[in-house]
Image 1 (cartoon, rainbow, N blue to C red):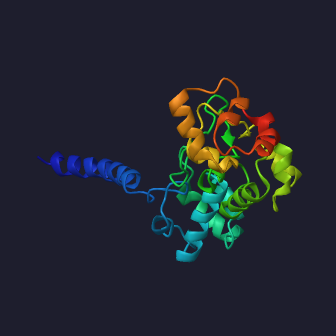
Image 2: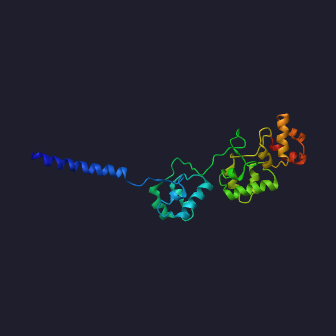
Image 3: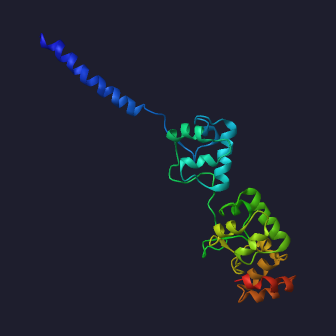
Length: 232
């Protein structure tokens, strides 16, 4: 009996540190915030991030894509080295995906590239370096001056320079498939008689060649001749 209290004390001396260790593991640090998927409200859990900075983080990743590393937060306006140092151990980039990017449905699935001549502004932001403002400029330029024939033509849009063109190279497509394009895509491409094109195709079947578009009522032959090199 005399040994029992001693045994109990010894057992507690061993168990207490073990329990404290596991509690530190379970409770430990708060769960890391995934800066690629967190909402503006969730981002405010990070030190030094208030409502305004949280909105700027969301805006940055929406315009530029997912953060590849936590250190890229330094690119967000208002986040300096000191704030970043406090955030770093509490943030993660997860799987490198962001819920604020919508998947692209390319106008030409065969190429896997985004058709800049038919894509709306909401899809054009998928191109590297293209944010909402620049996407709207691309659409406005396309509507005013007609379709782009090659990647270098993108430079006619204010805000797109040589470096931007190189970033987009291989990601942009310019060809319109006349037998698969929708009415909306024909309209975006610049065809004023898009509705008639779809109606003719439904009645007569596929066009044997893009030149067969001349059979469609109200076809602008001059416009067709100009865009013929990028029709399929």
